Image (cartoon, rainbow, N blue to C red; front, side):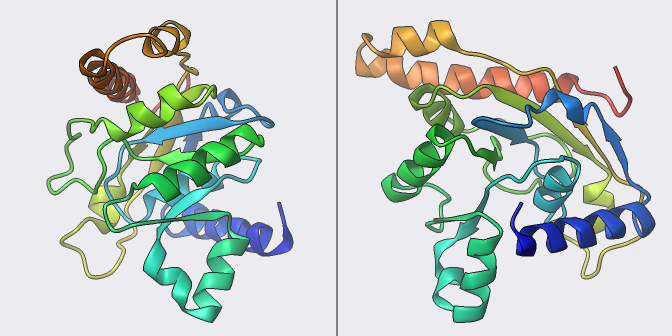
Length: 212
């Protein structure tokens, strides 16, 4: 961790431990080194730093490209390993940066649902994460956050002191589908992207707020 990241990481850990009385389960399942995709459900703006704060390594985050145009904010986001993406959270440029960082041994958090839930329930996965997984060689760690919708969902103007938790699941590998994707036709390739996304979302759904 660089100095800026460590300061932010420490401040978030203090906030989650005191104001939100957080619980962290099975963080050891995320490798401390090497490329890894951390796939989490998305219920609140609290989720990205919550997932990152539970780990003893730095990870990369996605941030809207327009935010990088502001000198101070842009510099801070870069120091926190943020990846600029377009409004829809994808695009060829963003994907290339993500794949390059994974190849160079970085961890990156992605949200299969694509956006925050409106009712606190898990949403269907979008195929975008499947594309990223297939084009990379990194393992995928499914993650589920609990309580963040109640603490700071879409309908809340300010965060409430509701207890939150984050659970890291067993790593997933997709060697067979990655191998098939190299030779299949475009129609099957689209199916593979969605299949990967659905399998990750199913793994997230199985996670419970307790240690295994």
